Image (cartoon, rainbow, N blue to C red; front, side, top):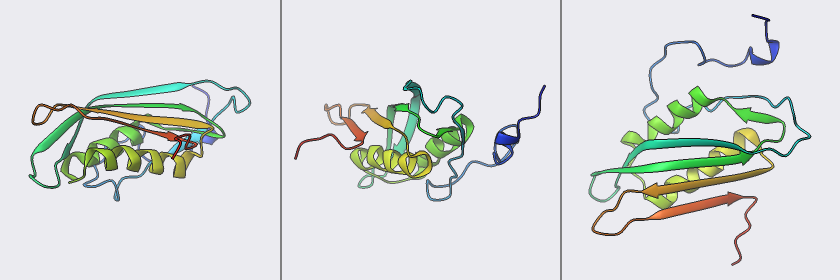
Length: 140
């Protein structure tokens, strides 16, 4: 296989490492987008996301959907998997989780567009879905 110098900075891919204990400890890695002039969507689906309710400490589960149009970089999926798994011990409200994921991805990638959608399992008979977008297009 040809050597890829543009991937030299990736520290997780192809290595066995311990899962981070929190999103603050996790490292999101990126690699160069080789088609930066093209507007194309990348969709990443995490159907088994889990976190903790900050009030009860009970586990919350969700399907997290991430869709983005990359600019100069793309997120490396193993680092994303580790980052998302780091929420399993994190007490946070569902809405905060979705916004945190969006903010952290924007910070490392600066994509052209990004949508993060969290479809959380019902609790107390109510199912919550939160969606955050970049750039922020919501009317206030």
